[in-house]
Length: 400
Ligand code: AMP
Ligand code: ZN
Ligand code: ZN
Image 1 (tube, rainbow, N blue to C red):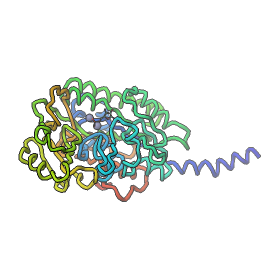
Image 2 (cartoon, rainbow, N blue to C red):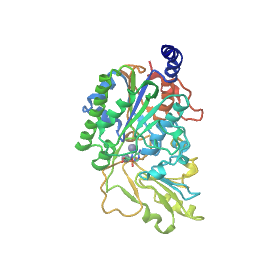
Image 3 (tube, rainbow, N blue to C red):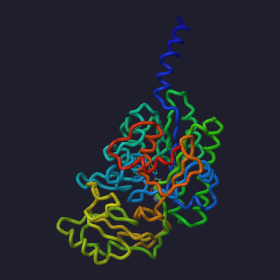
Image 4 (cartoon, helix red, strand yellow):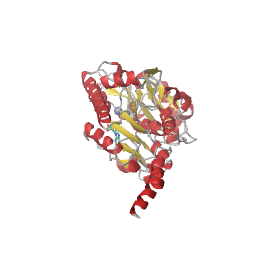
């Protein structure tokens, strides 16, 4: 009888469980703020290995504004920022006064802000298990909208131990093991801000995260999964040098007009008080030097950043390397920043991919970050949401 039960399990139930999960794996890694050219400095042997044996893009174009949370959402949902709704790292709903703020988990975990469908949600609907060792926007308060395994963000969590956990996840018993995993490292962003993209310190950070990548490859080999896992390495944006000599004091221009200002540095969202819109716009327009001022309706179409109701009436975008500030800054410490026009090459990141599904030694031009979501769907043979901005035909040629 016992034997019969086992036989029934073997014949009927196990294949059903196995069929429910795909036979491929994708690890999607993000090196925050890793500018496209960091990979060409001769200090990244493990990225070089990916270039030689996989696909390498000359750069990876973020969406505007080239900031962390908005772009991680664009990568994972395939949507422009206008459409997925995370319009900045921090912003306000002007209709309710509620705020979304990077660093405040209570707000960044609220599902209501996220209008796109992240890949792990699409995967879940298709019976694929997923996991995340960090990804901005991965800790939503609704279970069906987050990965099956998710870690609470801790910037200082040791990098090599993150890889160890990922290896543990993808070697779990077959029915529960995740087949799509994200990994995130912030070091290159932090060092880029503090020391600048051309400093010796950023080169140390670049070499450090590259060695973590090498560790991942070694561990995949050790568990004999290096031939079955597709590894995609991206970054959310680049970095450019800024200087205290390149500051625009917006507060001095519109100080007493009672405007609400959100963000500073590469761009600013300005909401003038009722009836003062033209007055404020005209002052800014007359002083439009080293930045651009736009009415919301006139924001260039290529930004894909004018339809979301949370975007303010007036948008200021600084010229590359310039900083928009609310008041005079006495101690200007940062050496690098991002958030500028996403067509500026300094704002571009990286895209590399290696594994059984990708061409070998294949070099391509710039890839758009919204195209990663349809690529992931293709890799798992599932249908993307119909309302995305990404296009498979712009990226599918990198597949075998
Ligand atoms: P940015 O201001 O655009 O440079 O944002 C980068 C910052 O976002 C880094 O300092 C990260 O530590 C932080 N960060 C990245 N992922 C998360 C997350 N999942 N939760 C909270 N903060 C994060
Ligand atoms: Zn970032
Ligand atoms: Zn940053």
